[in-house]
Length: 196
Image (cartoon, rainbow, N blue to C red):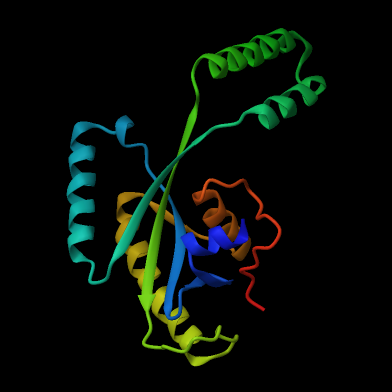
């Protein structure tokens, strides 16, 4: 399994805030926390569209926007509600049971989807060495600085639209790539993208 994952996605290392893909291409991933567009008035929607168009046209570097729809699993949420039943006032407990039954029935009939939005920034170095990079090398530091500048530009451009960016930790980046390949939340044995 590890060999096929590395063929599909030639990741050499994942470190804090970015990852090394192939030999000299670096990427950084952030999750965009969106606004609810459909709840806005028509005037606000037009303002958001105009602002977003202006933002995209003003970028001087490539940006990949990724939308992922995952089936929402509510088992943990419903279990947590059930364990807190004693904390609820006694006259509201029957309503809690009805609410849990309603959620279970809704989920059984309709799959609830959670849409997540991601911004992927890339930076290409001019390094052609075939060995993995070591922490502290100039290229890794240069890529970190360049991607931080790009992330700041994107953050400032999206802030007036009400969209916030949340950077990924190293572990979240691991899970993002593996889940993108159809895997679960943890990597299988034999795959090691850790930055030592």
